[in-house]
Image (tube, helix red, strand yellow):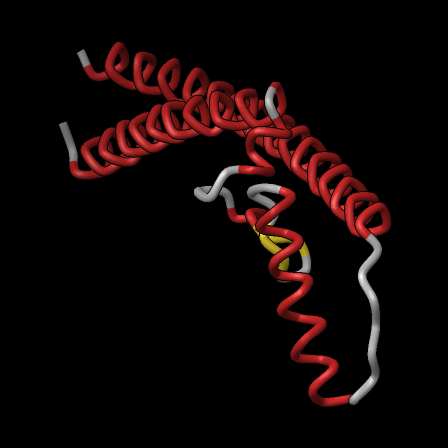
Length: 143
């Protein structure tokens, strides 16, 4: 066996290993995207989620959102000296609108992730099968 065949085999096996690792990590991404897609509201309320806040406001609960708005308004009033009153119904509607926007955003991102990971798995499997067959032909020709 000459050096060219050794280098070709190393290349082929490395590609196969990389594609298999890509599939494994993509499966993890698919599982996460499916969980996020099926329960986007819980993700929107979750502290572990990157989207935990909407425009800097805490979305974990209505009370947390309300507190953040009150603090933000108090800080803004100190700077502008303008008095703005908070209407409870308006604040609840703002929270529901922000939560709805966040849920749609999480679902959209989950759909994009799911599509991307499925395409990545497909491409990886095609590359794996191609290189694995090529390695088998290379091994048969060297016997």
